[in-house]
Amino acid sequence: MDSSVTAPLYRDITDFAHDMPSWVQHLAEIWTELGLLVFGVLFITGWWRARSQSDGALALAVLAPVATAFGYVASEVLKSVVDEERPCRSVAGAAASLVTCPPTGDWSFPSNHSAIAGAAAVALAIARPRLAWLTVPLALLMAFSRVFVGVHYPHDVAVGLLLGAAVSALVVAVLRRPAQSLARTVRSSGAPVAAWASGPGAPPVGRSRRRARRR
Image (cartoon, rainbow, N blue to C red; front, side, top):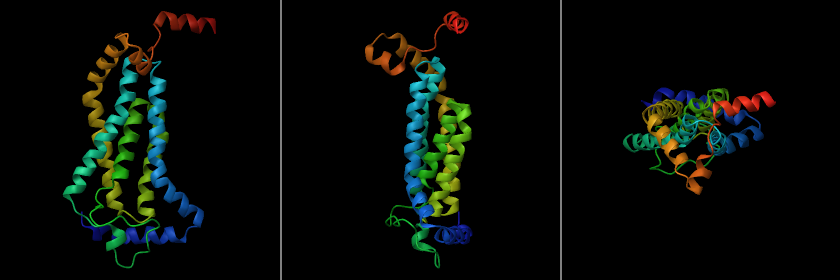
């Protein structure tokens, strides 16, 4: 995409960023990286929760970070093909970026952070649909923060989000059944490490009903 198309919007957003209080600016600077950590925590808690659930739930929980990694790789491959300079270096008249502008050769299109966020948001929402209300806004906020701090064009983050989300959904769709079969195999292996990593799984239907009656 021609960067001149979204350059005016980039200038508007970075001007807006400079008009914000310093605490908002610092929060945006932190969030561009902290968002990755938040998704990492959601991956771990999702896996831990799925240990006591069905093979399918465990498979989706394990696939979430895998699908996210594929989203990042797809973004990195595209970035290596499209050598777009960072807006903090190439947009004339724009306000200075709030964070250090990445060096030349660290190209702008698409945004890897946004691709990771989009991939993670979709993968986690597939594994736990109720999380969509959290993961989707987090991904959008993370993508916006990359423009806000001045290191990406709006089209960089938009394409990054869409690319990551699409790749993540495709990976989950393709690997869901094999991952479920693998989860079933690991749980039945009897190996101590496998038993810890995969958990006991969901209790039999009869047992869960008896527990419900006791409560």
